Amino acid sequence: MCDWRGNRLKTIFQLMCQLLWVVGMIMAMGGVSLLMKYRHYSLFFSQTYILLPVVFTICSAAFLLFAGFLGTWLSLRDSRCLLGLFVYLLVVIFCVGSTASALAYVHSRKLDSDTASLSEVFQKYTGSSQDRNSRIVDVTQEELHCCGVRNYTDWLDSSWLNKTGGDVVPRSCCNTTFLLCKGSLYQPWKLYHQGCQVKLEMAFQFILQFIMWTSLLGFLTEVVLLYMTTQMMMEERFKYQALSNT
Image (cartoon, rainbow, N blue to C red; front, side, top):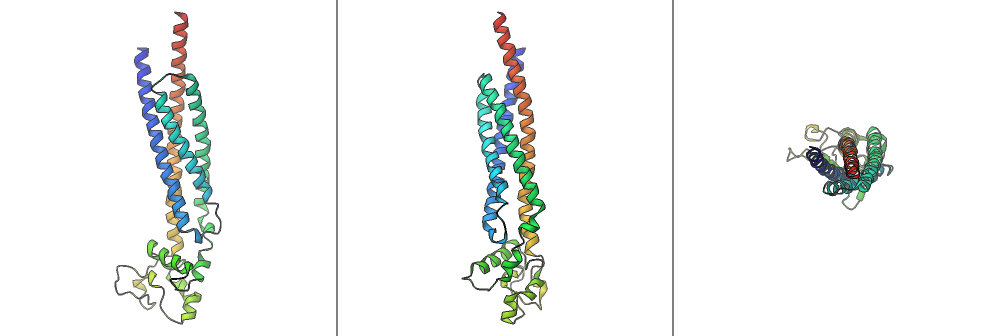
């Protein structure tokens, strides 16, 4: 009866360790996605502090993957020493994951201040394909389907529109559903109406919340594994005592 209970416990433990490995993979995807997104739009960020959740998320993912492999290996053999190491590793993962989640939450609440330099970049727009600022603005408006910082009317006060003396916003503001759009302000229905700052914040908000929810899933998995590890250590103690009595 005791052996049957021990085998069932090890099977569930092995499944939970595999879940831990899956959570680690998902968390790594979240960290890498945030890093790639930041590198793509880094010009719009006044500070680099948003990279802190990236570092802690990727570290947490690495620990989760290692713990998943270690736990799966432990389920195939009996070792109280390695079980103790596994418990210590879970505690470290909890600390690192909690830090990553807390940092993700903080930055999700202050994205408006983190992207404060967005207006400056748009003001420096020249329309030249040789200008890095201008290329990034055009690419951002095309990718995020947005126009201006808050909306397309921001271009009315832009230095680029004042210099050209025209009534045409950049072609990247054109809604792709209108094939004949030339960016004319007299045809605003052909332009994207939502500003780029909102769209940019939404894109980063999604990844940061993804990291927070993944960290929560990892925390719940770790709690279950800690409980199961305790049970397995007790099973090992009972086996040792039984062998000593015989």
